[in-house]
Image (cartoon, rainbow, N blue to C red; front, top):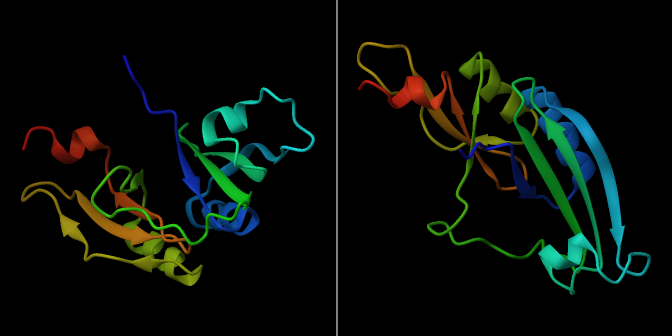
Length: 156
């Protein structure tokens, strides 16, 4: 059985992203931040095995939600990957978080430099289940649900 334990996101400023995800969604730092410098690393290391030998410096941190799902944030420092853009209809598209209060969460997102990307959608004629697409200040799409996926789509 597969279970999602965490999602990894690349961000241009790790400290700013830690602050944003903790303030907006209540995540906490589980482990890190960690610094990777190829000049000081063992020749056989996990970072370059996964990311490639061109990665010389990076930082990462594991954040955790109170619900037990994590986000791992990566700041690539050398080489800089800030100018890369993902294909909008291929591969990773967004993460989805369950929130207690949709309106308050959208307001916090906007207050802290993010934005609302879509209108709020009611997912059922008979149940108060809603979703909205938002964006963090780094361009990552964060979908918000008022219930878990089973409640949102099961029994429709």
